[in-house]
Image (cartoon, rainbow, N blue to C red; front, side, top):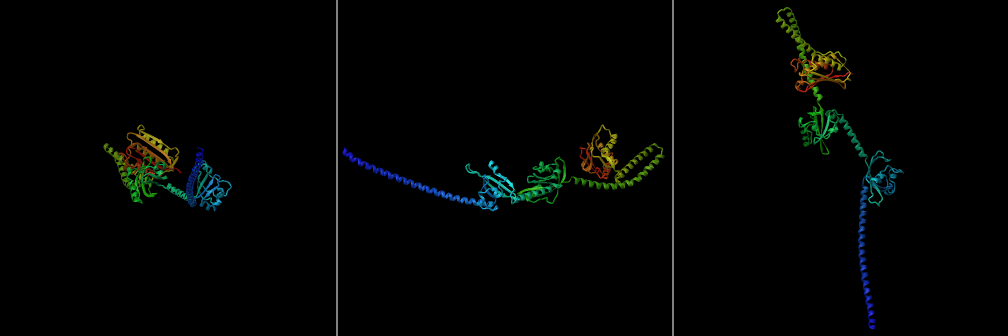
Length: 528
């Protein structure tokens, strides 16, 4: 057994050694394979990184080209105002190379100063928002204006904070804005000094422009009216003015250019008034707009009425003067002979008839006298007098003739109007005629309201009654001789009053509607 064991042990060791060698070979081979794989992977990673680096280089060149092609001046500074980078526009403006610009303080390059300027770096650092500023503080070009924007560029906490500064020369832009504003001011000045209302509306009939004259004429303020429909000013019930807008929208031409249209407009107070309107069409940013020039024709219409009235009165006056002249002498003869006959007759019936004849002749003579007052040129005895006192004298006489229990007299006198150069006796006749007419228009009693006031260089007197009123057709003729709505009137009182006021270089007019009473307005020149 010992001999066998001795034989087996060497053999066993031999096989163990062989096995160990095989295992080493396997291990080495595995290690080599693993290393080869790692080397291959490393090569691939290096190739990918090289490609990425090349790609980044290309991107850097691309972005650098973009950076340098930006027309605005762009540069990057850190919190210590040191320039980190700058584009070509910035470098060219200050005649620098990138090497000479980077690493320098921005205020040294830009302003040639040793201390920082009023830079918003601290504000940008606190807010982390972009900062905008407009400035013109450069030493070499103080007349120019620059628009600058500053951004914080800190992407990660461990990165140093930098600021991107973009600056643009906005001088021409601001010059254009200045010219536009000056042009707008000139346009606004022209617009607001125009005496006619000028308004603009869009295609939805909304008001977008309203000048000063429009405010005065319509009574609306610009703030109140902008955005409202134009129907507020010219309601549809006065006619479909929208058709004036529909045609230009289709044809792009103004159908009323060079034409004036008469319309009825409406003030804020609800008062209607005649107006002439002309419309023009234009487009801004492809949006249609309409501009209307509106003229208040109230005074023109009043003047037209006065002219027609004056012409009628002149024609009637000539006829009346001829008639008065022709009948005056026959009346005197008839009256004289009637008195002579009466003195000789004794029969009572005949005397009564002659008395009636004499009274009628007297009445006709008074009428002829009134006609002469109407037709003759009034000679005024001008002297300073208080209009308030003249009215009070007229009222005292009227109160003695008419019962005060049926008629109420209210007076609202402006005590500051002072005296007026006038003929007080003639004006008293005017006031009495108007007040008596008002009383007789109030058969069941009523109220007479008298007001005086001073407006600019005029003294205005208004006499208002609460009577039956006058219709529009009769209102046109009330100052004509022999026109009367009363059964016992001669129709000369208002005609004579008209002539007296005219002689004072004043004006008189009446406002009335049926069942709403009548108001007479008398305007006289104030004492200078």
